[in-house]
Length: 274
Image 1: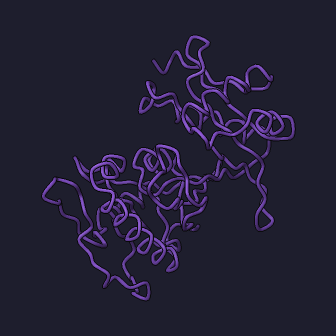
Image 2: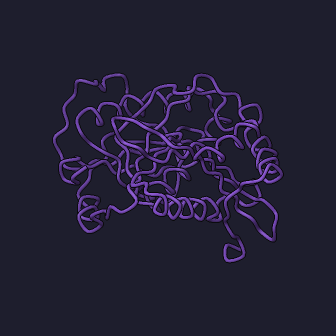
């Protein structure tokens, strides 16, 4: 199917209206108005559409960002029609975004995503070799769409340097020696839970070169079957990642497990020249 999907820039009001319709289908009340999308693409922004037999099945909306004297491309929203998810469409959109960034002089692409969504983590850290060392608490406030409702809108800030090569061999070695920073077990209902209580302190110091941090393989399943457990994951992961980021660790990869959880690989930034 992927070889039949083509990516192109969305420019005209008619094309933008089609993107906005899909946007609303995916994000509901959080959808971006078509007039804002059109204004963005006419003023330095970018909307990419993924088309299968001329049918829009996905999109990516970006605009120019500026922070700490650095100009970058901010990838604000990516969405894929439900029937085509988990098939690599998002990765195609990201690589088209990469080509646009190269052609237009951007060295850095940034975006934010839900820290407990494994599919988004896999895309960022396994497929694109991006990294993160910034955690934002409840970044958007309360969100009511199907993906986000019920939890604070915490986000990881991801950096993807277009021309920078990641040291894959070194990261492989660090993954081999990394210990789980906290253990996990299963509830009586077969849901994963972090086996750590409130004794985990943000003042705790960490000294190893690398750690593994579990996250649930299916956040939405946990949210439906045990909202309290989903909250437990949110606040524990918030505390642990904030602690490690403050001590100069960065997420550089996801280690896949057979079931229940995958794990973030966190490595000292001094070992990565970040």
